[in-house]
Image: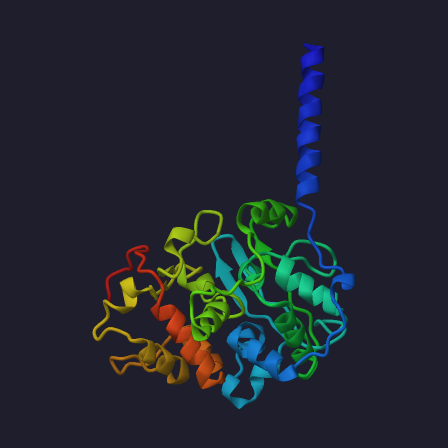
Length: 312
């Protein structure tokens, strides 16, 4: 009996040690970042397509009056796991990311690891950002140095146990964080590939427009097929042809591009809810990028997602 107990204890300790090793937060060392001259204008494009202002600007301010670059954070994001509070990403050295190195920033976006070496919660959509080109991430970091510093540290997340244990995010990453930089499809035109990159990488459209499983990961077979909002109080539409082609009238690629510019849908109604913030950002993109996003979305395979609640 004593021998069996010792063997069981050894197995448990070995399993814990192995789990600890395989969940070590990944990083990008500075040595992997060759000399580079950033393109700040492209960084602004990444900022706009990524909708950074929508989450990271100080809440309760009017983005239309110059507040979209006050990146002091503080927005509360409700979820089944608790409430996440969006951090300060202004250039403030103490409370924002002004003290971060470029490698810190690249690591956060591509690996989901903080400068302190801990896992970031996937409320920060690094599952999509991991597909970004390294140059675009570096350009974005250069652009984020240009807004005004905003003092003020955001409060910590309010998460239920055990979801507040960051090391467990390493297990989540083993299960769901797969992929790397976007690889163009040589059989598709350049516009389609640009749209696929913007939608699946910096634009992270699937993060909102897809249903999630019990662990909060996107259900891949229903990607882009819509579902409930994270707080359970609203509904995000299906943007595959199974959704858009069954609207009255049906959406064309031209309709999608126009909607991204002014928020008006083919029926003459305007975007509401969180999509209003998205339109504020996509309206700032070049017409070519909006057309590319539209071309890609229009080409998505039709997928049925969760059934939305009846319209009131």
